[in-house]
Length: 308
Image (cartoon, rainbow, N blue to C red; front, side, top):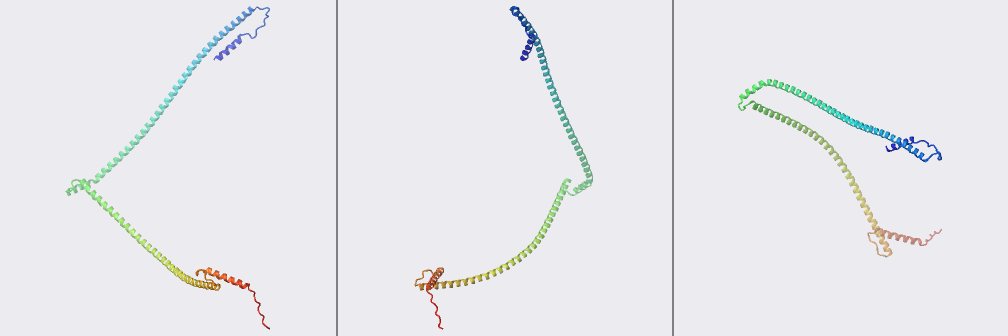
């Protein structure tokens, strides 16, 4: 607002002041006249500025008043809007409550209608049951009279309910005996079926055991044949081992004899054990090689030619 006032006064001052001051000749004008003219011009400008300031202040006051009125109207409109919004919210809440209340009323009416239908159905059922009981009472009337006659003939019973209770007890006992008999028969049938299954199973088991016995006999016969075969093999192996042992003994005796002959020829006592056959044979081998080398080193004699 201060900037607007300064701009306004500047523009007004520019309008009041002369655009161009005419040049005066200093030789013809007096300084007093110039000063008076300047004061008059400043007074006119000041008076114009005051008038324009008053007009501006009047306008500003009017504008401020209008602004305040507008703000009041705006506040009033805001309050009206808020009151209208609150009114709409209240109306919506009342409508929602009314709809919920109406829905609850409809639901309550539906439940009451269903309950009424259930009660009507129950009443109809009770009426049918009453009619059925009346028909049964009419039908059992002769039986009641008969029970009264029987009660008169049986002094141990005082009232009809005692007789009926005794009859119900006997009927329950009879039903229990019949049920027990059916159970016994069922158990007997089950035992017979089990016995038949055992017989069938025993026959199958006997047949299976017979087959197993035949297989075991075949395996026993095969085992006996294999045992005889391996016994003959064992006898053959023992005979062969005896022959090999005898031959080994002969070889060892021959090696010992040769070793003793070599020792006697070399005139040395036997230095090896009698069981060391390999060492004895090695000594005999060395002796033979030595003698072969000696024979090879001797000069060969020419054969004599026979006389013609």
